[in-house]
Length: 130
Image (cartoon, rainbow, N blue to C red; front, side):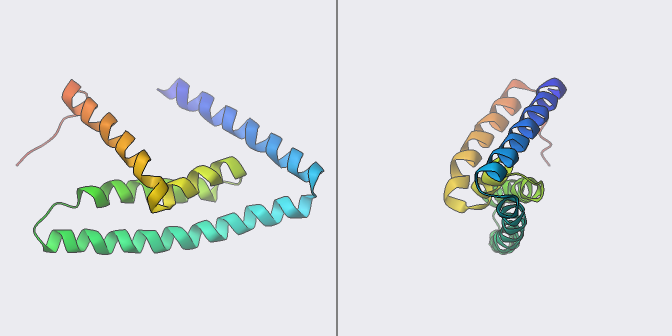
């Protein structure tokens, strides 16, 4: 797992640098710098908005006596999206926005849920029940 993550980070960084150089040559360096700053600011605002909405939905679910299952997955996706958006780069920003926008977040949540349930079923993850 560590090797895959390490390779993913190296490959992503190389692609981001190539995109910076390509866009800098195609347009100019100021466009690239403005894009990095703008996507960071827009991402921060979107992450805050989505995060607060998710917290409010989770509170409502708990007050109604239900477990906030969807909201937990949403919260993890929003947190991951926000972290990825704070790293400079257009490829990572695209992934971060996919995780922050509710419509595009749904397929990622379904995929993550299937993996988590498979791990639980396999016995790789222990579930504590009270």
